[in-house]
Amino acid sequence: MVKIVVGGHFGDEGKGKVISYLALKDKPDIVARAGVGPNAGHTVYKEGKEFGLRMVPCGFVNEDSRLFIGAGVLIDVKRFLDEVKITGTRGRIFIDKRCAIIEEKHKEQDSSDGYLKEKVGTTGSGCGPANAERAHRTIKLAQDIPELKEYLADVPSEVNNAISDGKDVLIEASQGFGLSLFYGTYPFVTSKDTSASMAATDIGIGPTKVKDVLVVYKAYTTRVGEGPMRNFIDENSIKNYPIWQEVLKDAREKGFNGSVNEILAGYLGEKGTVTGRSRRIGDFDFTLAKYSSMVNGATEICITCLDKIFLECKSLTEYEELSERAKEYIKKIEENVGVKVTLISTGPRSEDMIDLRKK
Ligand code: GTP
Ligand code: IMP
Ligand code: MG
Image (tube, rainbow, N blue to C red; front, side, top):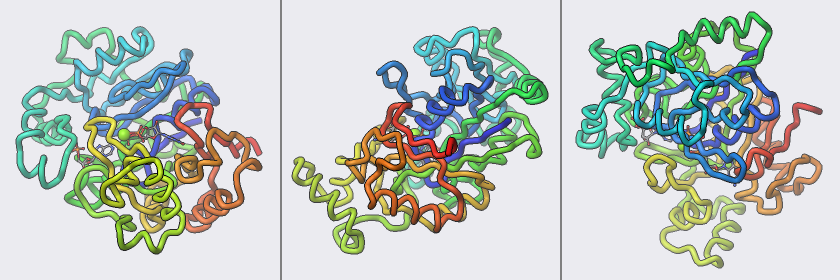
C-alpha cells in the first residue's frame, strides 16, 4: 500500500512530524523522500531530540524502515552525509543514482541573484539554480560523485518490488501546494511542482500504485518568503477573527511585542527551519485548501498545530477529549474542504496525535 503525504498550504505544515507518527504507527517497509531538495526543513523528534532534516527522510525514526531519496530530489552532498551521520542511518538509506547534485555555484547564485533572493525570497539552498541547470542538461548526477557510491540505488526498482510484495511504502513530499511552480502563486514559488503526482514521479512509481494521498494543513496558514497570502492577520483584519483576538491577548500578556503579525509569529514560534526567517501568519485559507485537496486528489487530510490556537488541546490523543470549540473548528475545515480529517496533531512530538483512522 502506498501513501503520499503532501503539504496543502505553503509548506511547513508539519509534514515531518506527521511522517514520523505514521512511520512509527504504520511501520512501512519503505519511507521515501520526494520534493525539491534541501530547501525543505522537516522538524522531527526522536527520543526527545529535535532534528531539522533537509535530506534524510523523517521516517528514519522507525529503525526498521528502509529509507530512499527519489531521483527527482536534489542532493546537497555534504548536508546528506552530515545528516546520515547524525541520524545514524548508514546502511539503510539509499539515494537514486540519477539524483542531481547541488554545487557551491548553485548556492552562490541563489544567494546573490537579486531576483531570486529579494523578489522571490528563496531559501538560498541552491535548488532553483540547480533545477535550471538540470533542465539545461549539464548538471552532475549522484552516480558521478565517489563519496556517494555506497548509497546509490535504483529507487524505482526497490520501491516497485516492495509494492509487488505487498509491502507498505510511505512517501514524504516537501514544500506545499501554494509553492508549486505549476499551480502556486507564480512567480513566488519553488522550482518544481509540489503536488502528489510529482511526488510519485520523484520516486518512480505510477499513479495506479498510489492508494492514499494525505494532505497536511496547519490549523492556520503560514508563509515564509515573498508572495501573496489570503487572510493575513494585521491590526485591521484581526477584528474579523475572535479566535485570533484571544491568541493576541495571551501573547501580549506573555510579553511578545511588535506588529500584530509579529506578535503572533513570535508567540506561535513560527520561524523557518532552514533560514530562520519569521513566517507570516494568516487565518486558515479555505480557498487554497479546497483547491489543493482537489489537485492532489486527497483521500484524507491532517490538521496540525491545533494546540497552538487551542491551548487546552495540548498533547491530547482522543477526539472526545477535545474542547467543543476545537471540535467545531475541525468540523468546519472538514466541511469546507470536503475531505475527511483522519489525523489531528496536538503537539510537536510523534505521539501527540489523534488518529481517527482506527474508528
Ligand atoms: P517543509 O518540508 O519545510 O514544508 O516542512 P514541514 O511541513 O515538515 O514543517 P516544519 O517542520 O518546517 O514546521 C512545522 C513546525 O511545527 C515544526 O517546528 C514542528 O515541530 C511543529 N509542529 C508540527 N506539528 C505540530 C503540532 O501539532 N503542534 C505543535 N505545537 N507544533 C507542531
Ligand atoms: P526556493 O525553493 O529556495 O527556490 O524558494 C522559493 C520559495 O519557496 C520561497 O518563498 C521559499 O521561502 C519557499 N520555500 C521553499 N521551500 C520551502 C519549505 O520547505 N517551506 C516553506 N517555504 C519554502
Ligand atoms: Mg519546513
